[in-house]
Length: 412
Image (cartoon, rainbow, N blue to C red; front, top):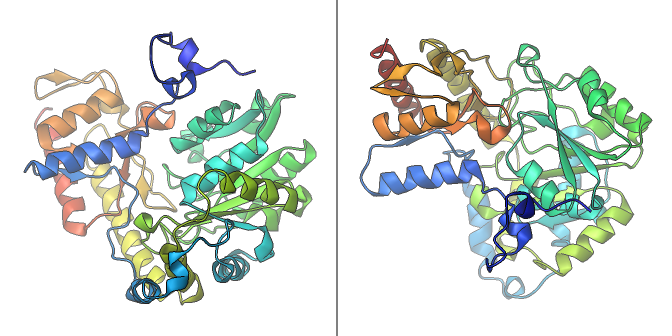
């Protein structure tokens, strides 16, 4: 059985907290966002690049559907654990429309956001001691959710020179007889990397060859730019058979982070177990949010296109401004809404009388001195980097980066 991190850290036997949760790391991205919001509430002129949350309002037709649903007594009651039938049908429709993946509505589970879908996937598939391959940089939740399921997160180092796109060779070096599952996400949080269709297919074939399950996180599928292309691994790598789970949600695409609607889909036996697990934990997700999500998925993509155009403009602005800062180097992201600059050129330098010995310390200095909140690369398994979200207003985006530039330039 996997040793609990709480024990590894020297668990205090007098603590009233369980060993399991004593070993659980907090969400670094949420922590940065919470600190930035607290400072703002206290009157500080903080500009936060921490949260992955679109600054746009949820499209009006979605909100209107929710308002109408509030007057329907059917939504005041418990509904099926797996989700409202109309929403599950809408997810099946949307999945075929957007990625070409055909799935029956009966094999879809509506979850409390995409994070819940990720955690449920690991709870459903991972046994104690199973190894789960997680390419780094990674979203902070992946290794923690694997840990909670009793599995062992195995971090796969990727190359900055290759745009942090994981390769078959890198995965093969990390594979052992205990490897059960691969976490695959493209476009990537935190780097914005998009893996080419050919390489996605190659990774899928490699997983199939070694009987490895793949969890495909497609939450950013609509946020790709330029010539980059998102593809769904089960579609381009049919060799996987039914050894895959796809997780997704409405949060990023439709500016619905607070509505908390995600989903997972996969083979029938896995989905039956996942529904059973949810029936004993959260039961059904809030009905009003489900109705709103149904309106989102059955409507057009015009609002999505508008938001993507704005994100595209902002990613170019942010990349350019970051590269103008002495000691910072940033490749242009191809997807999602994050830049992931290398800030190693600032490590060890004296800035405003202080020396940052790590990217985490540098992030603290920026927040305390110029009121700019970023998430350090330590949170994503790659020290020496920052993650900055460009899902914020154009004026704030430019103001915060101007502060960053002037702070560094004046210290040279």
